[in-house]
Image (cartoon, rainbow, N blue to C red; front, side, top):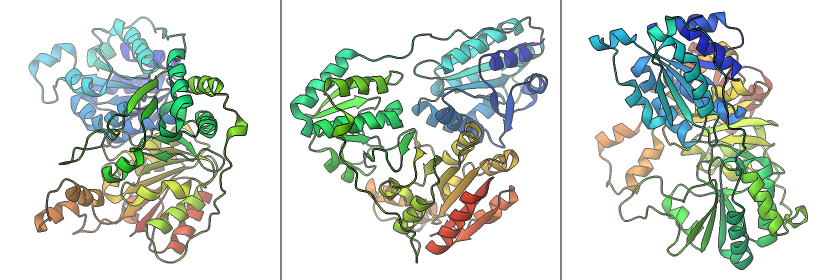
Length: 515
């Protein structure tokens, strides 16, 4: 058994049985080990940003980490943008990154780089295996880091000679046995605040508090006390749809977020962070909370927020009977022209039961949240890190994690081009993903940001940098070229039919919505 095989066997024994991969020469012994060792599913991506994004989507839905296999420093660098998104979402991932053999590094070959230096900004745990007999133990430590509370991104660098030299064992993964808890004192502080001034108290919830169970508890607390419950602008995952607590999110646009938060004197954080603006703008605040508003943390990432909410509900005597009856919203398929409202309506009608919705619709989808609250029960995933090219890889990983669930991926045309190679992986693996591309032929969000930062009136050169035309992208042709059936729609009626067909059929599909 060589070092590579000891690592693969350790990964499988440690419950890591999916590897999203884009290997090169230095990783060939690891590839050979993947071929020899049963129990590991290997999913090839044609770009490393697809690989790392898929690992993020897999963790968000499965709750356990997958591994990636990346080629040296440049391969890792290609995947860093989606590792940034994964880190912001607190996803657990194990990156295996090849390195030159130790004796070869000193020659400064073309692909030599500081891999540890590249890994550290997006990884909480980084290690280079010194020899083949250390590889298994290092792999077990990487698994433990990825499965810790909160989960981490762990990057293990595997020099080629440690992969091909002889090893003697696999290693046991030593995990923390104690489940993440919470502070009873923090819960009591939150209860005291809610008893005293619930009208001016905001419960800002994220992470596990956005699960169906967490939201049900938050709804009881809101019903009992009259406090307001909202989520962050972009949550990692939230349970939504009929019968679930339809909370709002903090608005992205500062001019909309400020009045939304202005009445609050207290903000109780449940795995969430202080509400801050996504960017700095001249003469606009970075902090969105009003002056004098006090912030109190009830739980942090990795703590048991559902148990904390249960304790808070108990302290307040909040029960199911306190839940306010939701007004049932009737869903009607739209007709006529395509616009933001009819697009949202069509999607709300089409989301199937237990679907996974991955949202990178950015400008087009900014108003999708209210209409889709009445859709069939589903999970909704968003990009906490802001690096675009997020949705199609995350949808790919989510589909690998949950093969029994339909995945609906919504993406703007500019974002789609960053990781369009995801479609090829979806076709190869026959993943049940419906990709909806909103083709407005522009980086439309940047046009709004140009105005928001006060950059003046854009001239022709500026406009050219904000538009995606000359030539016009043909997403139907791009999808078909990668093996994904596709169609374009220009009316609400066509969109309804395309969604109905795509949801009914299995395997990947793409719909280009021409706006």
